[in-house]
Image (cartoon, rainbow over all chains, first blue to last red):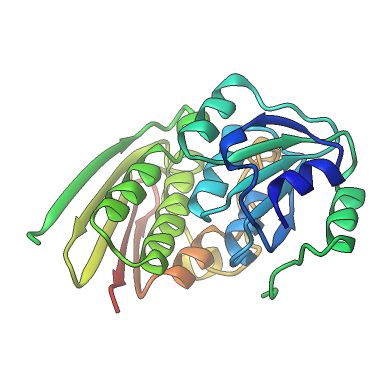
Length: 116
Length: 140
């Protein structure tokens, strides 16, 4: 699935990373707990989160993720956006809740990881 | 390639800057052409360690030595120390305060996760004096 399709499915706003929006991603995970993302996530390219602080972008960076979707209408601040731009990470924002966002993406073909 | 040494000071007060050292180490390894899996293992382990330095250690230092065969990392703080290292290594055990959990950390996965992503892990800790964690990731 292209990141642009994720944007469309979630009726999301593009916050930064327009040049990467046609890149393909195959897996995603959803969590507000960065500890768990670092511990359990494997090759997922998209992180859905309702948590808003710079460590969300840092976590995605360490995990080589390509895109972060902020759910529940959460908005990253300027510092977070700057960090994402520097790291070539696409930021999207949707008003949908976590469960609905994950469900819609899964239904449309984006997969989760292999688990623990 | 000669042995490359890197040193970083980690602030104990600014959570927003936590991860800067890990990010720089990751970029260094990438520029040096290490395999992606090695880079990610080091990045995750150092990042967890750096977060711990900020949350628990009151700041500290990170020293990295890079050779073609092995990446050695030492994270050291002069914080309160770990009274029971075996307990701290258990998944889910955490002493992190609520404000840290609200930031997405403190699930009790930090130390176990560092062990998972490294080939060698030695914890030296003394209550009231501080903690030093020595890590090695071999380039296979």
